[in-house]
Image 1 (cartoon, helix red, strand yellow):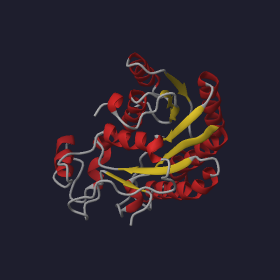
Image 2 (cartoon, helix red, strand yellow):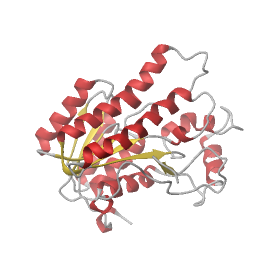
Image 3 (cartoon, one colour):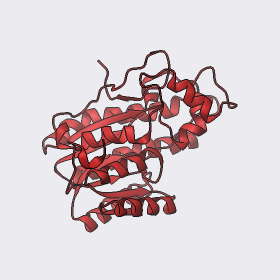
Image 4 (cartoon, one colour):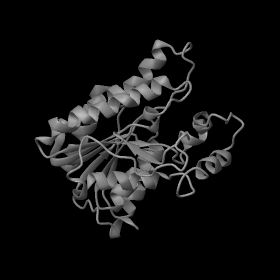
Length: 278
């Protein structure tokens, strides 16, 4: 199904996607544009890829701009929202996607390591949420990004997992605050997605793997343990995000459920899980 034929249309909406220069964020930006939204691509340093993506989305028929901002800095977050609103006059959807990966032995994690991860993954997402509260239109949408790491015991991954657990708590507590204005707040928790990040560190999620594993090895392993027989792609995550951003999801707030259960529950990768499990 392409964006033009989807029921979850976003015509006339303005969406900000943080960390949209590559990977899942870029996939989300493309899909939002395909469904009619005007898109603001946020990037920290990947200016060429961000501007190229903005041009691609514009050529496909949607308005799109790229704005530089470092989400670990509150002043940059404020600037991002102010510039987006100055250009498009409003903000209807915010997808907080910026984040960095981290693995490290517990006895070797430095305060600087900890602060770097939490400043972006946790503190940054809180203040993106705060800016969204100030700038979103009534009946808008805020979507935060967690990870399957928040739900699994993964070796040498405590700092990253902890940074994502906090984001899920933010969403649950944001929901009643934002709800007075009809704004929904939800969290997605992707995993097993075929991106450059998965290529770099994907083997670390697999107990039997090591650094000699190739991207193909990782992909085959994941594919053999998922119902659809393949890894997720950014567009798979993006379609869930666009649903949450649409009118169809107007009654969902503060939680999200696992969408694709694994054939082997002991395996760490999940195609997509959410803020709560029942």
